[in-house]
Length: 220
Figure (cartoon, rainbow, N blue to C red):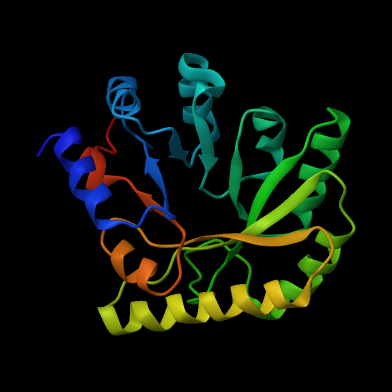
């Protein structure tokens, strides 16, 4: 199916309140342009170098979402270019974001990435380390926390529901705590294979790549 057909199908299956992020990692400029021409404005990238190449072509006409693991030494390259960072996962990264954005007198909107499945192969903060990060977030001026993100373990629908429900419960708990500088606006969870389940459990941001653009070619 074409990008246009895929987008029609996805748009029919998600409520209006859900923000669709088209994950364009490994995809060529032409594919991004096609999706842009079809009305998509939110695109997700997960490598800084690839993101910068695409940013040169589109700039801030696109709302760029940085969804991959963000290395501390790469923060300086994305300042002022990203609409939302989905992958804040450590105090160290938080402090670097605060330093770089305050230097430019800009604000970084970020989601705290939770490693809800406790997978060693995935980034994201473990729940037992979350309080420390939240305390540091409350002390920031230039990093604004806008919600949570997760990438759940691969599993069946029942295990997907379990992890998405845990994330929704955490989201609501943090919302009720009224923490300084921490707003629970976005719950980013669900990808091509499980986004409908994620939405049913409370996601209001879904990140869809292959479902829009087709399979990725990692050899390029």
